[in-house]
Length: 293
Length: 323
Image (cartoon, rainbow over all chains, first blue to last red; front, side, top):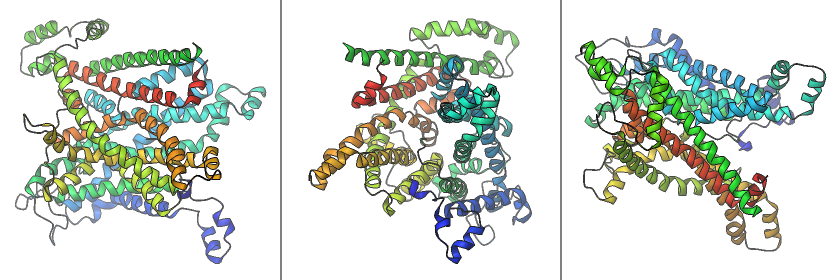
């Protein structure tokens, strides 16, 4: 799927005025631009949305519970009479805080582990790789469920647990990339020049696996949105009284059979737009080229 | 002799690694269980039971022993196939686990029934016309579907096909005594979100295999010696592309297990995912440990079988593994 990725030489070849104009902007793929716009919209909602929403997202109104969308409540109201539109705008806050922090924690930890295993090799690598295998032989969601039930769900524990669960996945990828670099001549040169192992690891290998880590960062962010929404839906992630989308869907789910669809549909649309935006950005920077899940 | 050794040696090493992994998993889960807040007796009897009864129950269950002793106690019996009694059901764990494996396997079967033909078909189309609009659409749709959370796609499918159109029942569990077809019919709607979730992966793997086979020397030879396009396609490209692809899919099919947790909860199926989730929520430790171990065993053995299949089908890899 190289064809979907932006070719780096394109803007150099085209020298029309459009090409020159585009040369002034960073060379971004259209999918990156659209994805970033949607992501920025949600970030803006998370930061300042509370000032612009038509209703207080926590105001309960027992006279208009589960009312269908109309001119007053564009997206209807939920089981406590709260305005669904206002809650969706404000509900972006927790997931947009938790998912990037969890991703950052996981990718940082995983990169360090991967670098150490890949650079040192030998016994360290053999034992480390076996431990990573053991952790990864559990489905991600099972691992996270167990941990969250054990220590109790909260924003902080979700960040830590998702971060720790991502670390082995990232470590495996970074380890492979680091091992590849280790065989190169410049590493032997550095070794002969008397550089220590830590210096080789951080000063020589790390800059050369930068791209691998960046791609891990953006694809893992997409899956973090996925996982955190799922955990909230299961009651193991973000906790009430947050207006979180996954939580709202869990609450509205029981009303579907009564034909009251709006809570589930609009919150689902919010989740889908967020994961799609991340996906578009990832597509733009050429992730997924030979990734497996 | 050397040929058989070449297969047996990596196989034995693989089996050893597999058992080691499972043992590590059991220790990990056991440790996680120990972190659970509150003691087991207190959780079972509730906050108002008197301290003496709690201590008595803990003594009876063995949960007042030191952790290593508890682990050894559990481990020595688990080896013999006895996974202990469920704390919440007050009955042996094994029958619950067995029936949940059966229910999950039925769901997984339906998923694969849709996933493999559609995914491979889409991958072949994309691979044969790589770079075309159809290819881009298939790849983009596949990746997009794979990142929509399965509970979201599950709910949307449930609304459209279960409630509005009413084509399928909204419960994944068929009424008691239902026949094979009725039970399968109930599982179609729960299977669809998992199919959608994984289809992009299967298509991408197939596509890569087809593109590789198309560019291979044997394909060029086949074209140059004047075979018709369909002969080249079926005898050379597809035959060479699909065999390793199927093995790769087998290697990764453990991913299905993760999806079971949410889908089974959503559609009320008493499967392995639901068992693990409810055991975790109820802090039913023996049940949790057994369920998670079974999941890990399925996960690592499908990967091993996939690798083995790959090695058997591809002589080059067999030689590479040989010492």
